Image (cartoon, helix red, strand yellow):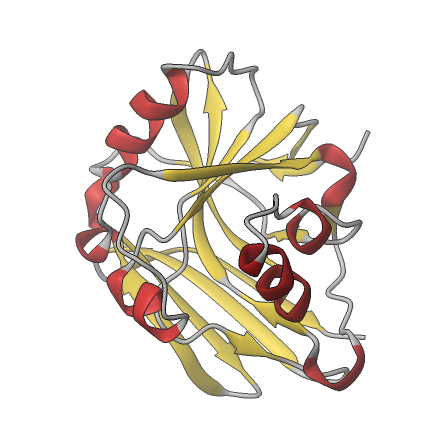
Length: 203
């Protein structure tokens, strides 16, 4: 089992619950329809990685996300996550109305910072993602179609949650391709207070 770090402890998520199409800007840049309920899919524990692996010719896209770690059925910790996507594969699957697992659940498709406990207002959270010192994504819960508590309640309506499971809450505008050698810095803020920062070098 792969693990994440929460307050310096190793945690083993049984699953990663992902939210698609939760920011209007990202919906528009992919020419998708605005959903009337959360779009939910799953990444397995085997998708977890501590490294960012680049595909060939920018074939894998980054999506920076505010992520939550669960305990006793509640969002108790927050971290920065990358939902890595084989976009060309996803586009082919979507065109045929097929599931996305080949594009979203492959080994190495979920990369996380450490998680920290957070007991404040979840709706004050926002993220920043820099690649090669350039800000490429900047967005927060105020831009979400479905806020964190709404997402949690929707997931609970049909899915059993285990301690340590992670919810990835969707990505704002600015997702795109990357290449080996690119330097990533992801940050999570509560308003203007920095909660967590992590850096990676894509290989």
